[in-house]
Amino acid sequence: MLHATYAFALNGDDDVLFAKAAYEKQNTFALSDAVNRLKYLQHPLAPYADYWLMLANLDDASPETIRQFLTRYDGMLFTDRLRGEWLKKLGKEQQWSMFLDVYPQYQLQDPSIACYAVEANAEFNVENTLEAGKSLWLKAKEQPSNCNHLFDKMQRAKVLTEEDLIARFRLALSENRIALAKGIANRSNASDAVLLKQIDAVNANPQKAITKRTISLKTPFGKELYLYALNQIAKTSSSQALSAFRTIDSLFNAEQKSYFYGRLALHAAQRHELEAYQWFRLAENTVLSHDQMEWFARTTLRQMHWPHLLDVIAMMPAEQAEEATWRYWKARALKAQNQMLEANSLFSMLSTERHFYGWLAQEELEASLRAQPVEFVPTEAEVELFAKSDVVQRAEALQRLDLRWEAKLEWALATDNLSDEQLIAAAEYAARKKWFDLAVLTADKTKETHNFQLRYPTPYRNLMQSAAKEQGLDEAWVYGIIRQESRFMHYAKSGVGASGLMQVMPATAKWVAGKVGWTDYHHGMLHDLDTNISLGTYYMRYTADMFDGQETMATAAYNAGPSRAKKWMGNIPLEGAIYAETIPFSETRNYVKKVMANAHLYSPRLGLTNMSLKKRLGEIPAKFSAVVQPISTMNE
Image (cartoon, rainbow, N blue to C red; front, side, top):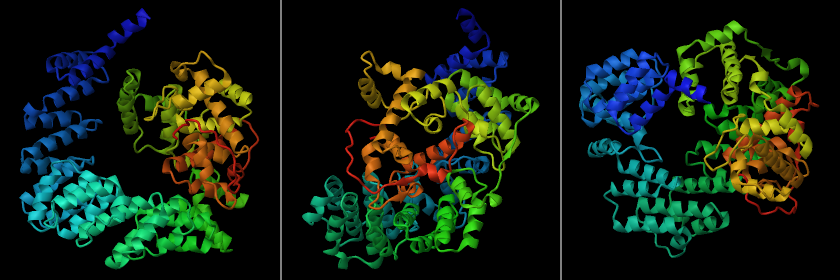
């Protein structure tokens, strides 16, 4: 241990951590000393320390000093970040000429800088500049505070109209951003203290505001507020929202009526209500969002009404219709109507793509028509060539120092614009370092040439086999869950507290420990590899038993809780892929598809009996009255 600590100090790693701490405390003297030591040692992270020092001194640095720094570290990960901070400084000081000189080199996206850019161009009378600010205005979220200065200019120039205020007011309310909505309303001459109080009242109790008719419908803002109240009610009750709207619908124009029906349909579709389709049809006079178009399609898919599904996909914007999800279901709809030539053409193109719908498309084709993946194993020379890169050396140093976020950013830079073969060499290097998350992420990026051993690694095999056997689980399914949950990084921890390889929630772990009689269990044990796998696989067994071994539903339950998985069943039996695609929660929907595709790929890797993905997904029975124990689950 002493030797390891000495080596850590000798190679300069401790100086990196010292420099980082000095930067966080804004101790520029200590930071400068650390920079000099790291440069002397030629440490791969010396540029990072130099970057921290430049950031700390940015307010006092001359333009020439900043330019020299940017030139010296051109191509480094942090270079554009520093350029962005400089642009913010120039914008704040209204040094517009220099701002416009620096801005063309800026590659990142930052709304604060984008607002300054519009202001800078306006200062030099660039034609239609303020009009360009419209795209920054029409956002449902708060923009940085400096954007308000731009919006003030736009409003004074009458570029920002009353209609623009109302449009963003609607956007803000649709995302429940009440403070933003009030700020937008304040910009209007039609606004007053009464409207602002009404916004708060509606947000607090929309049903009461509707029942007591406290919302004035004499202004556009009042009508939008009423539509917001109806939207809030529609989130829990379609019938109440519809009833309230029908009493006053004559006061709204065609677009406003369509907007209401579009929101009503969205919430109803996410509850799998049959009426959602008709309500979407009544929304013809408004522009449906990406999310609404998806749920319009899912409503038809849930009922397996193939002609309607084709109609909805045809209504989608071209970019959305080209998403793999809708190309696959379009092909299925065409096949259901015996339009085999067009269906097989879509299946054939999809079958070359390595994801959930690519695998399903492949199974729809005759064996002779299926695209066979090209496998590649990198040579030692190819792996070593990748490892020698300065970027990779920085990523390794950052990993060693447990600066994982920065390490992942450097890794992304190292693997940008690589060929499939180079990506596989990079993934092999990551796997050797036991950076399984980066190995999987990198191997997943290949387009035509692949390495499925790196895409679907099998670390901790003995532990997995033992746990799967003890619980009577399909080992491929266990690996499928873990690949999605943690990418095999045992230190993984989610934003909601789930931990370890199997991302077990503390409450679930405590419940399982009680079930298996672990009287000495405590929270710290959740991070132990064996314990985490035991807890996770027990819970997998629990969910599988609850749904008679139906893995698709059990996977949904593992992520979102058993009661939700049951609630999402249909009134008629559903194909597993349809059940998965119509899960209301986007996180769980994507999770289930990825886990089941993972399990499908792991089965042959583990030497297990293989089955088609469609068969693995199975059929979801119609709703039944099973007893679901009320426990604290993964995300419920």
